[in-house]
Amino acid sequence: MIESTTGNLLQADVDALVNTVNCVGVMGKGIALQFKQAFPAMFEDYRRAARAGQVEPGRMHVFVTGALVGPRFLIGFPTKRHWKAGSRLEDIDAGLLDLVAQVRDRGIRSIAIPPLGAGNGGLNWADVRPRIVEAFQALPDVRVLLFEPGAEPRGAERRPPPAREPLTVARALILSLLDLYRRPRYALTLLEVQKLAYFLQIAGEPLRLRFEASHYGPYAHAINHVLRRLEGHYLQGATDVKPGTEITLLGTALPAADEVLTDQPQARARLARVADLIEGFETPHGMELLATVHWVVAEGARDVEQAIAAVHAWSDRKRRIFLPHHIQVAYGALDEGGWLAG
Image (cartoon, rainbow, N blue to C red; front, side):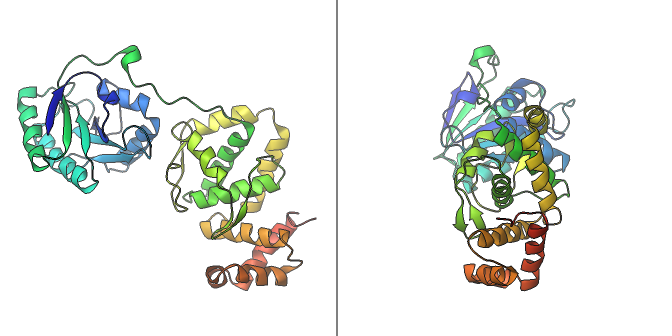
């Protein structure tokens, strides 16, 4: 069902918002700039995809917001191959094929679409509109808000970016640790974030997290809430709570964290101590191993042999993946760094 409308597309009450993008990772004007300002995490994901050659004519860039309120999907529709170039009708045709497929495959029930290529792209709306209408005839049950060309929303009419959460010392430390962890080029997931926070608290930082024994070792539910508060401002990926979900730091993270920690020598010392411990263990397997061994010692294992027995008693999975030699290495690293004292 096609509904023609005008106004501010970013305020449309729909499952998905469509944004017109180029293939080189630039959002410098028009509706693309408005999307960049309103959804910074989406922009970082789009820019990274463009640099990897994953944004091209006929291929949608789909960003899942994870939001409970507002659009669930932000769809980048490539209407230009380069931001300096004009739009091509053949690229609109190719893109509409994939857009319809994405809407169908993702179960999208409503979508807002701008005048594809008819603004800064230079195409004639009279040529573009019939193509959109024809493409969505294949999905008659989907509500399509088709925004006609007109004046762009200005000032207060634009969707405001989400309020930036204050960066506390604890949050700054977590961001700094995430950066230290990712430097050896390993992907960073929620599993490792949990373990980094665990050791930061053991080092003496008052994070006030309550850890419990879980499938992958010590786990604190509250960390997920902390990460979500940083989502879109300092990192992205925190809206999905699966252990293997990759977390990416945004460009704003480290400068902001460094500013907060400048006059926090004790916090920096704890950060350095954790950084020394994890060196050589920067994988999901390594971090789970370290944290699990520390946990069983804290729970009463008095030597490495008891630690091996306790880790193997944790679960069949841990018994399979953590060999006695692995546990001995982790125990030695913890002991050498003074993490097992007391």
